[in-house]
Image 1 (cartoon, rainbow, N blue to C red):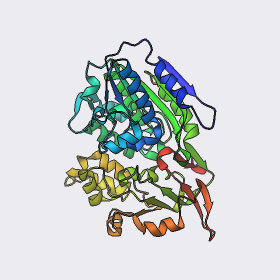
Image 2 (tube, rainbow, N blue to C red):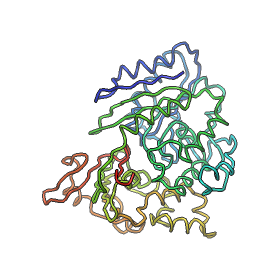
Image 3 (cartoon, rainbow, N blue to C red):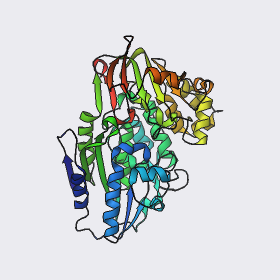
Image 4 (cartoon, rainbow, N blue to C red):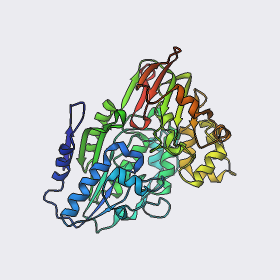
Length: 424
C-alpha cells in the first residue's frame, strides 16, 4: 500500500490530518506485535515523535504489544527526558537502546564488484549487511520505520533504508558506508537521489529485507522558529515513498544563494547538539554555499565534546579535522589501525573539514580554546560572539550588522542544505 499526503498550506498538515492518515494504515490489520523504529532525539524536528505516539496508542488500544527501537546509529541512547519531550507519554521502558557493536545479526554482504561499479572504481571492498536482530524477529507482524527525508552529507537524502541499515545497523555497514560517501565526495551527492551509499542500502533492501513486513512512514518538514511544519507524509512499503518524499524535500529543504557566502553564522540548539560529531552538520550543510576564503562561525552553547562516544572522541582529538587528503593519508598508514577500525570516524573527519577552502570557528562554553584548536578548528569566546551575533535578534538568511558587516544566518543546519547557485 502507498499513501501520499501533501499540504499546500504554509503551516503544513494539521495534527488531525496526520493522525487520520496513520490510523488508516492500521485498518483491517490483525496485529499482535509491532516494532516501531523512529529516529532519536537528534531528529526532533522530523515530527516522528508525534507519529510514534499516535501509532503507540492506536496499537495498544487494539491490544497489540509495541516495542520501540530508536534509530541511534552510533549516537548515545535517548534519555528519559528526551523521550518524554519528543515522544510524549509513551512509557520509557518501551524504548530499547540499539548497540551497533553487539545487537546485530549479519544478513549477507554487498559484493565488492558492485561497490566498484557504483563508486566509479573508488572503493574495492565488500560491505557486510548487518541489522538489529529485532528487525528479523518473526514475532513482529509489522515494522514501522518512521523518519524524515532531508538532505544528507553521506547518502544524498536521508531516511528510508538508511533508518534501518545505519539507524539500527552494524559497525561494518555504518563505517564503510560513511567512508564510501567521503571517498566519493559529499558535494557530488548532497540533496540528490541514487548516490553510491543509497545504492548500497537499496541493494540491502532488495536482497535481504524484501520478506520483512516493513512499512515506511516518511515526513518532509521545516521548523521555522523551532515550530515543526509537516509539508508531506509518505507511507508505503516500496521505494516510491522515498522518491516522492525526495521530490518534496528538494523543494522545501534546499536553499539556494545567488553567490558564495562570505560569512555564515550557524546556531546549534543546546538541547540537540552536544558534540561536534552532530554539530558539524553546520559544516556539511553549508559548505556548498560558502565562498572560497569565507568564514563559518558556529555558535554551539551545548557542544561539550567531540565524539558521541569515548572511542570516537579520542580519534577526533588524535587526528583532527585536517582535510580529505591528510585523513586519507593517515587512513592508509599501517600504524593507524585505530582509524581503519573506525571508518565512520575517518569519514566524519573528512566531512567536518573545509579542506582549507574556508575557515571554521567554533564558539563553545565547555571545551577549552586549546582543545578546539587542537582538532583543527579556530576557537572563539561564546559569550563575546553571542553578544555580537544574537540568535534572538538575527533573521534566517542575510543580515546586516550595525557596523555594516553582512552575514548569512542559519538557526538550524540539520533541517536543510544551502547551495551557491553559481556552482550547482
